[in-house]
Image (cartoon, rainbow, N blue to C red):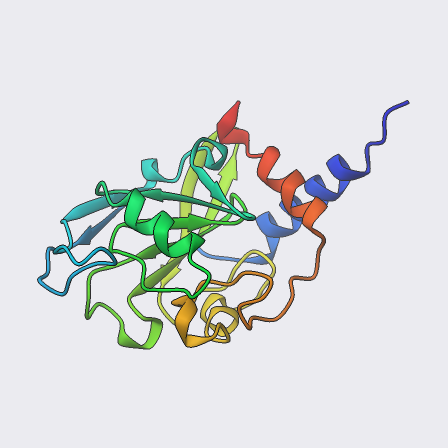
Length: 191
């Protein structure tokens, strides 16, 4: 009989995420304005509009280490350059990063939120292939486990642009890499 532990762990984490964070789904559009601030590759930031539809199957995105990355404005190469850099960098506006299906961070235009280095955090409700935005914001969004997104990400060393990896200075996650992979593979939007 095959081992069902990864599936049970994933199901348990998904259920925890679904009930631990309260909040009504909010509007589906975020405007990222064009600025002259420049992105990771030195070019001006391209205006994009983020809708709930942009939070689709994460395993169709580009994987770097444990996280999944996409760009909403054609800056994927610049985002991947930062993600793969051994010395860090600043992600371009329009970058979307997800570790698990229920959480996302979107790099906004320069000046959007100096406290969060222009990242907006999202807690997503995902079920039966559908996504809704349960919570979004800068310093006050709580994830499905009740933790404050910014509270964790603010511990990243400055060169990592608030992006947590295992060696970026953030607190370790309370579950294994295997559990994270199980959650990623269980993304119902991928079916």
